Length: 290
Image 1: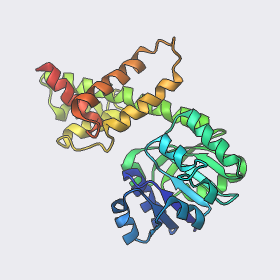
Image 2 (image 1 turned 120 degrees about the vertical axis):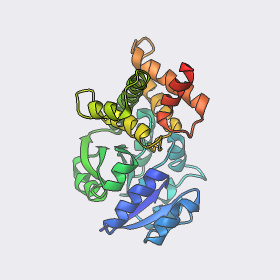
Image 3 (image 1 turned 60 degrees about the vertical axis):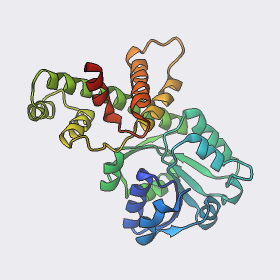
Image 4 (image 1 turned 135 degrees about the vertical axis):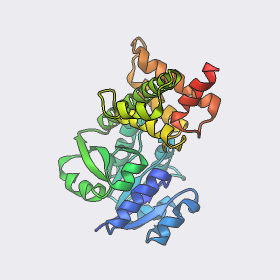
């Protein structure tokens, strides 16, 4: 088993850390707020006072940060950055979804000091992390694949290998765009069905077995069947992912659905709040129909 550093312990980071610990790894953790580390420390994670301490104690560090600016500042060559503490030959595995340009900047910064920066955006949600079934898109040279796989195998069961960090991020951004389009469509279909007097039970029976089914139809159905229990993705995260998709669209491109989805989610976030669930579009439609 390996010594692994882990920085960024939101809900996804915590879930991944649990799987790393279950696999027998020694995991050093750091987060801006210690409270998010308490449960992990209670089952064996080792708290580090700073990101610099993480990089001093291990040569394999995972990042699960919410924003590319945070990642870039962490790797900066200034007083707040940790680049000076990173050992030559170390490997940084970044599970975040960031812009292709930011990912390439991180690659260049790390390559200059003989450190491997690996883009490893993941998909599958908190439930996928908990069950060890996340899908990962990983940029890696051939000689590092075995080493990377030994780290990520505890929380992922499907890897798509690509050549560059930019390619990994483009694929993940497009996946997130597809999620967003599918979720809005699923919610609208369910809303129409309920307004037509159809029961949620029958909608679930048909839309989970016929060809209108999809992963995000399941998300929308679960939201309604559970009395609107959180789907574990906030409007802030959904809108952040959609903002990244704009970098893939040219100024003159006419992708009307992709553009409209972003507008709709921003409107829902404005009306309901950034920390509310991505499925709040259903309640937005309820309000608009009144």
